[in-house]
Amino acid sequence: MNKHPNKLLRELARAVHNVIRVKHYSVRTEQAYVGWIERYILFHKTEQGSVRHPKEMGIPQVESFLTHLTVDCNVAPSTQNQAFSALLFLYREILGKDLDGPIESVRAQKPRRLPAVLTKEETRRVIRFLLGTQRLMVQLLYGSGMRLSECLRLRVKDVDFARCQITIRNGKGMKDRVTLLPQTLIPSLQEHLHHVKHIHDDDLGRGYGSVYLPFALERKYPNASREWAWQYAFPASELTPHPRTGAIRRDHTNPSSLRKSIKRAARQAGIKKRVSCHTFRHSFATHLLENGYDIRTVQELLGHKDVKTTMIYTHVLNRGGLAVHSPLDLALDDSSTLADQPEQPL
Image 1 (cartoon, rainbow, N blue to C red):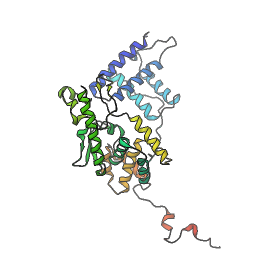
Image 2 (cartoon, helix red, strand yellow; image 1 turned 180 degrees about the vertical axis):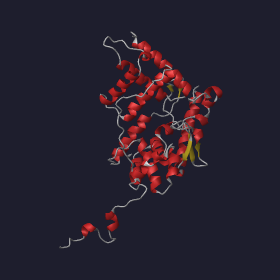
Image 3 (cartoon, helix red, strand yellow; image 1 turned 120 degrees about the vertical axis):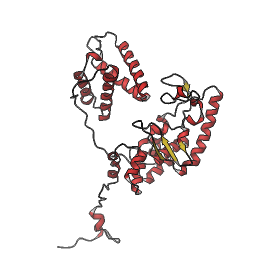
Image 4 (cartoon, rainbow, N blue to C red; image 1 turned 30 degrees about the horizontal axis):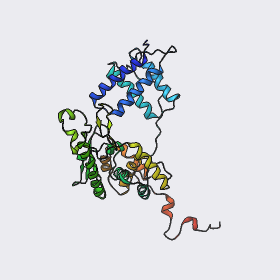
């Protein structure tokens, strides 16, 4: 038994931090994994308040913790999967110990839900109630199909005005891809970047102006972090210490304000559907398919690994592969409906 849980948790958190940095995982992944490992250890705390080192635990303890999340906490399947991934990371990467055998916990059932999609008119109405940079960001989400995280991490160098395209770096699955830059947004985005350039120049004049660079680029190119091309297209309003290095830098804008603005705009537009940042990505894909674009093209623009993921949008259209129409619609004449015709006597 370990009588000092805080000391054990600090040691494991430090180890997770070091390994995740080597593997180039994101800060959010690091925070999530550390949180799940802490919950796992404290879940198995004894009545006396002492904790066991995870080396002393194994499959039975992992199973009971995952079952607790499903049965007692009623977590979503994705949440339970994230917790499971964190524990696998702990045992394999930190402790060098494989969990021999299958994990027989009660697994959360993943419901099959269709994504919420706005019509083209509803999309225009929501955007109409947004202002400034937030309107521009939502227009990009809808016009290019980017995820919110990809929009936030967009760098100046990855916007190609001449080719009308945006390069997404290190997207989901650590993959790069190219997507659309709507031509109608070029003047607004150029004006926005002109304003951001003034902010960057002011930061440089005050001795700041560096930005976080992924992987080992900061060591390889010591001056790149201060160059204009590497700056975020949507920077934060204030300089803050970086969560990993502590260096005072201008990070990308905080997503919470955009999420709140979208909810408020949807309410003002009278939209009864659940509208989030990701809704515009769903709408992008659905509207492309409505316009007759090939599903493989949409898959590539979205960055889906498997076309089966993209196929969900054909179900949203209620067309499927057969493009089925209701027999009532097929029976209607141009001049009247079945409901308008008088009932014939037997």
